[in-house]
Image 1 (cartoon, one colour):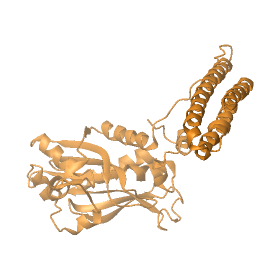
Image 2: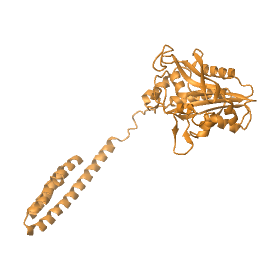
Image 3: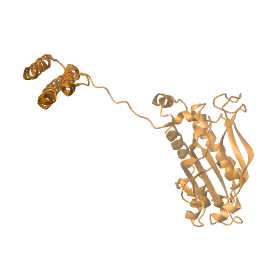
Image 4: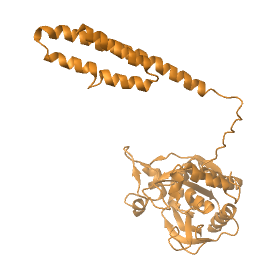
Length: 350
């Protein structure tokens, strides 16, 4: 038995000495110490020996196992160190190789369009305001003339949160009330507000989360002509003077009268396609004269002042500017796809 022990250690040492890489050492480990290894088999065979020989044989072969593990670990560490050293020498930085200039990044298309819209309205004398994305139902609905059980609440398909009376805002219109309250009766009120809004929509022209740009003007003598003139100036500035625009009567609880603004479809040029649902037109915003109830909730007397407001979909506008057929692709994080917009040849995007 003692001779077998010595021979086993000597044979294992010879095999480890000839191993040239860590993979071969791992194979030797399996040969000797694996489930069907030589030493493992010897240990299992102890159970078949006479009772008076089991203890001595078990201790002897268990000692062989421990010594074998130590020899294998030492050989493995030595070869792994040699391999890592060789790899580092091969990967050493060659300072003579010409460098590669880092590629320049770009803003996301939606950010670029938002900045472009901001630029248009800041040049018109508007100021920027912001509001929370988790909004109270009063600001999001009641203050905007949308009381409890109003049909418009069903149309907006709200995302509610676990805080009573709070909701993920369905539009940026609550900033209208916040902006009027902040003005505290001063005139004029002339603000724009942008940000993320949430509705349960998902199709080529809708996403559950999207971006809006809200505008509000309150002053004495504001009329529908002021609204229409502002919108015409905006669409021509953003989309070019040759873009066709149409105004359609509509209904919004917070404006009276109300209208929607459509522009010719960028995909089909007005002939009709799946994006414009065969009409040749794509809606980009809803607008109207501020409802008297909204003015009162904002702290203004509708008998003495009036105003207009509209909400613009940034994604819809991006579809028109970049001629997209599915705005959901903007959220796929596909850099190859998004990089195409760096080659936009129309009006320079900020």
